[in-house]
Amino acid sequence: MDNEIKKIKKRGVQAERELVKKLWRMGFAVIRGPASGSRIKKAIYPDIVAIKNSKVFVLEVKKRKELRSCYLDSNQLLKIAEFAKRAGGEALVAIKIDSLRVWKVLEVSKIVPQGAIPKRIKVDKEVIDKAEELFTYLSRKLSIGLEKFIQFQE
Image (cartoon, rainbow, N blue to C red; front, side, top):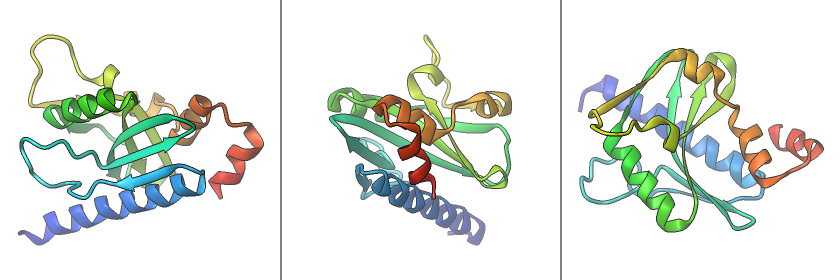
């Protein structure tokens, strides 16, 4: 495997592990998928599954150095959407943007186009910029008070 690809995968795994730790501190039951990032065609392996107060969040994790457009594999999005549907949860894409020191969230149901679906879906920089911050989104979905939310950010 090319060294650059190894570096990219390593950064992705680091971002997933960081998010798992943050979600755990927020009181979620959370697990990183055992085959996260693998190229298994028929299986459905989300990067992270987080559960709290009977709410299930199925996450595909992306990492970017700076705020810019990104491409998402439509097949992977459809698979995590199916996983979330079976679990009675929500399928999300969590994007860590290093330069802004923030995690953004996109709902998969709002990303996947109707009709013919391309192999890769482009999410524009502006869409990511306007997206809600991940921990604000989760606290809103769980109705966590502001003081508890601030506590989890540390």
